[in-house]
Amino acid sequence: MMQDDETAQLKQRIAILEREMTALKQRGYPYRGIRKRADKTIWGLPLYDIAMGPDPEKGEMRGHARGVIAIGDFATGILALGGIARGIVAIGGLALGLLFGMGGLCTGLLALGGLAIGGIAVGGGAIGGIAIGGGAFGYYAVGGGAIGAHVIDGLRQDPEAMRFFNTWLPFLQASFARR
Image 1 (spheres, rainbow, N blue to C red):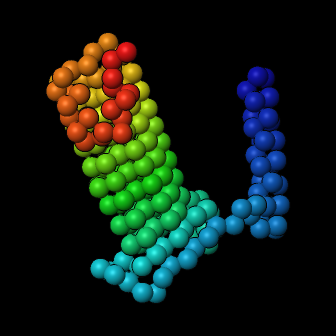
Image 2 (image 1 turned 180 degrees about the vertical axis):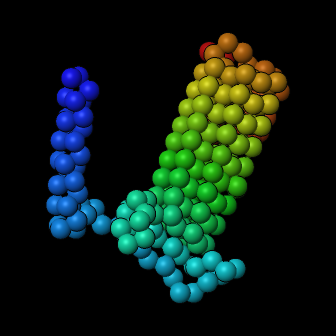
């Protein structure tokens, strides 16, 4: 008896979803995707590729752009901008950059973001050779809570860290002065 009720409810929900899908197809999708690609190529990649949103003809719910300049839900290129971006320079929610990454979670030789992981990492959480952030973990680290070989934080001011950061980031020198 209980299983029959669940089956009937499931069939009812399926019928409602099918009606909604039919209505969406008749109106066109509420959000129409964008697809633009350059004819000119460099190294076999289009100069630019833009792929955002759904493409019903290809059965894609999200666009994946691939080009020298890639802009999309997923973007892969030399310069990649997107929700998930991968490239030499990557900017996005999840940015995986080789040289530069900027985003919520990012990687790169220089990484700037909420959680930054890289050679030089600056962010709320920073992990790198040089780490600057609220929580910083690195060989040279500065932040509210810092862990590393040479650290500047609320409790410690390592002389080597002071020398390094004052040499390379002199505009922060006043921040490091003892009070």
